[in-house]
Length: 208
Image 1 (cartoon, one colour):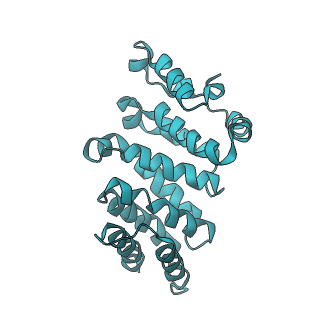
Image 2 (cartoon, one colour):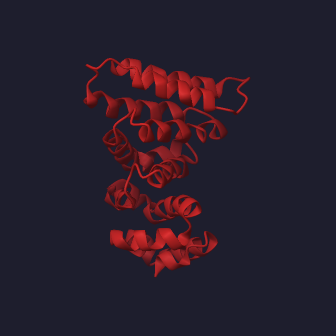
C-alpha cells in the first residue's frame, strides 16, 4: 500500500517533468487528492511518512522549475486532510537533517524545502515553531545554513501573512535567529551576514 501512495505522487512528478507539460497543474493536484482520499480504509497511517520521504526524493530529481510546482499538491493533501500532518512533520524533519549533504548534490534543495515548509505554515498545517528544526540538525548547523533557511521560511510566510502578522507569531515561538548562526561563522561576520539577509528580505525586525 505504501507503494501505491508513492506511485500516485511519482506519477504527478512524472507529469511535471513531461516535455509537453503546460504549467497548469490544478487538474493534476485535484487528481492526486482524490486518489489519496480513495485509499482503502485499512491503509495504515504509518505508511504516509515513508511515502512522503520518497515523494520528496522524487521531487529532487525534477528540474527546479518543475520542482517548484510540487508544494501546491503537498499543501493540498494536508489542507484537505488526505495525508496526516504528522507525515509532513516527520518527513520534513528528516529532510532538514540531510539538507547539508543534499545541497551538494541538488542546488537549491534548501530553498525548495524552506519554501515547502513556509507554504505548509501559511496553510496552518505546520506551526511556526517548526523553524527550530533547522537548529536541531547537527549537520546543517555545521554546514552553516540554519539561520539562512529559517529566513527563507519567514520570507514565504511574511509574503502571505504580512510581516506585521508574522512577527508577533514568530516572537511567540521564542526562537532567536542569531542563535542559529554557527559558532564557526559567528566570528567571521555570521551575525552581520544574517542582518544583511534580513534587510534584503525586508525582515530586519525579525533579528531584533
